[in-house]
Image (cartoon, helix red, strand yellow):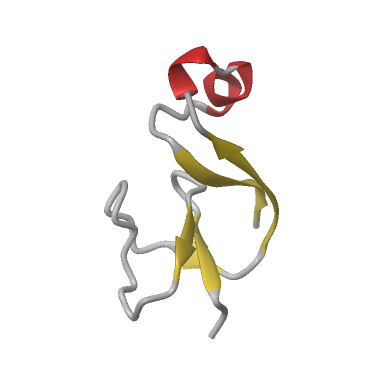
Length: 65
């Protein structure tokens, strides 16, 4: 298993802790197949966050397969 998984629904980069559910959106659709990530510190001021539909601070994958 990978050290990091990404939620296919919200694109949040997650550390593996044995839990197979995204703590942000509750999705069970996690993947190891992703590329690149962006750290969003202030989503309310970020154009990238707006484009991605992100409303919470955190690490997000740019491409999820």
